[in-house]
Amino acid sequence: MKKMTKFAIAFGFGGKFLKDIINFQRKLKKYKINFMIEDHILPHLTIIAGNTNYDNQKKIFTYLKKNSLKKFKILSPGLGIFANKYPNLHIRWEYNKQLLKTSEKIVKNISRYFSKIKTASTSSLWVPKSTLAWKDLKYTQLNKIFLSNKHIFKSRACTIDKIYLIDFTNNREKLTYKIILK
Image (cartoon, rainbow, N blue to C red; front, top):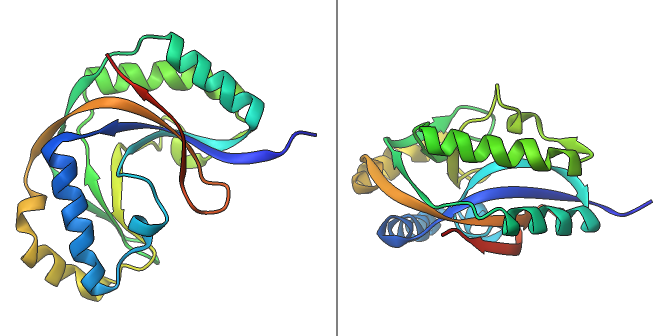
């Protein structure tokens, strides 16, 4: 039996918005919030995640590389919070035609390479977001964070211009492949 890995496919973006997000995450360190900085790759928008093996990771990469996916613009209306045991502070992304079309195409064509898909990756539960802080974020810190970083909470746009293939088997994200969109 082939060794299984935890694996995700995600959209990546760059530009000034990404720089602002990275600066925001650095500021969070003064609150001792660093789980999403130290154990994760750059902020991204996960499309699908689950269990697969190394051979299937290569098949996924080959499919995505051959498919000539195009970059597209996406809008964020600001930040959001999932209220759980550990609050999840994230960038919310608006659903748009290109986001849905591209993500659905990817999921449809590569889901067969996963032996198990995470529940949050299913179409009825999928939420386009980029997590900024989680696990070490506390509810008591939220007001200070919001008040001192208002600029990051406004509506912003960026271009999805990469696809990341991420191994998170050991609860640490490792970028295994990066595909630049045309």
